Length: 242
Image (cartoon, rainbow, N blue to C red; front, side):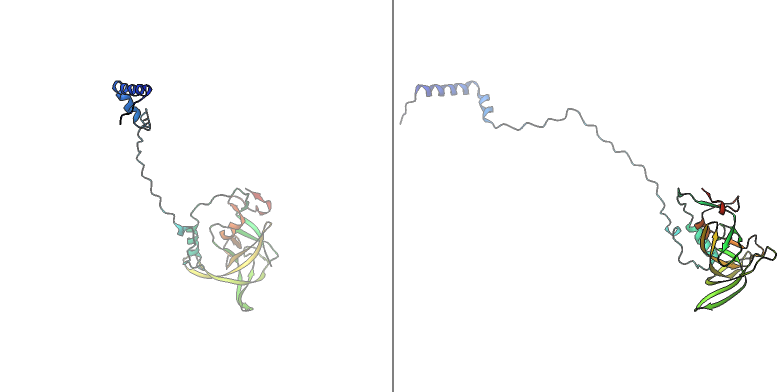
């Protein structure tokens, strides 16, 4: 069956055929789907990162924790062993406090509870435990506990007052004498006053008749007091602070 087209339709068909004949590429490109634009490459070339060889780290020796803790195996009644262990544990420097600390002389006067007269005391950082001159020592029991009765005096002073003191026995310490022999010494806890400070400390009962002072204050107690000026004496009442 043949249909007759209108002159307008014929002209449109002729235009399309002419366009195909004259511009084939244009029609093909128009028929293709539009592609997504490609990502533009960077115009500048990024410099490559060069890896720097790391310097070998200096190995750090592990900290000796045993130097910070007291050795549980140390016999606490052996003064020499305790002193050696203390020297090991205090080898690490500690930060200095910004607070003011009272300064004492290497020799001071102290007042022991139960004794009316003051006694001359030497403050000695080289001694571990404090010591006091004691005569006529006698052990006895009171209420099921061990006590010590002894006489305190200053053997360097003629006609020095003699005062009997009774105190609970803390322990028996072994003190190394200059000749190397270890001798037992009773240890008692006494309350004393130095300047306006009042403290309690352990004292070994000793024969100090050949010593410069009847009382020696060791570093265990000195750590509670403050600093010692080895060039001065009798500073406790002056309240020198640094």
